[in-house]
Length: 293
Image 1 (cartoon, helix red, strand yellow):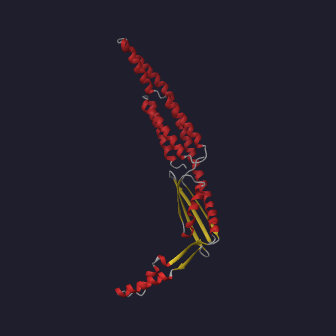
Image 2 (cartoon, one colour):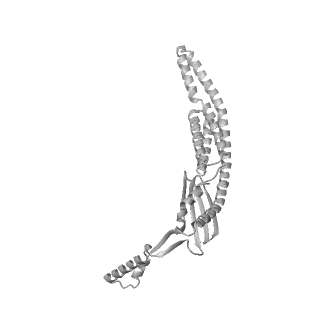
Image 3 (cartoon, helix red, strand yellow):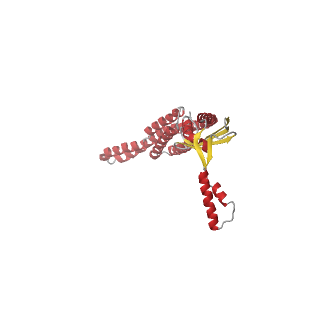
């Protein structure tokens, strides 16, 4: 089953201390990259959040935004650093005297502007409860997020199926054209040999070697067979579970390699046209594969 790497999910829940909102959004990326943005009170759970998400998400850049509104007491305790505030005020008063600053609120603003005058405890009250409530809310946000990944993945699957059908028709056409092209080449070489060998019989063996080498160079039967095998591999891989994007991308590269070889060998104009059509469809598939998990 294909899943898209582009999705969004959101959930809001009433919790013990107030209300909690979790938003999950992701875009395509080669590897899994989870970024968590939330209040300082919940920063300790960042690794837990990453682990919970990685259980169901395998690729993509995932951004988690957490909004917490307190309706009661904060889970962390804050206490003033009185001694530091006193030293800052004393120093500010001295600066004001020395420089003749007449602003009566000068020292107050310096004290208020210091980030270190408040001590925040690393301990959190009811940590297990907070962790469970956060996990529950995240799980509810993951539900619509996962549903969107599947929904978008189904659209990609249907698009790939249509393009695979086009590729299958093109390679079958090339197969038929190659038979016609081989026959035309054989006739042309036979006519050339007849005209040359009638006059220079001693060169017959050398010419036959050249004919064999040329025939080998323009033969595309092996490339056609491999292209069909890779195409079938692509179809069966789309039906599998798990992260399929990288595997499908590798198969797409093999398909490109085979069609490029066919294009370089074939001298038939119809085959050249079909290889261009195949390359166009493969390029569209490759672009879409960037969104597959």
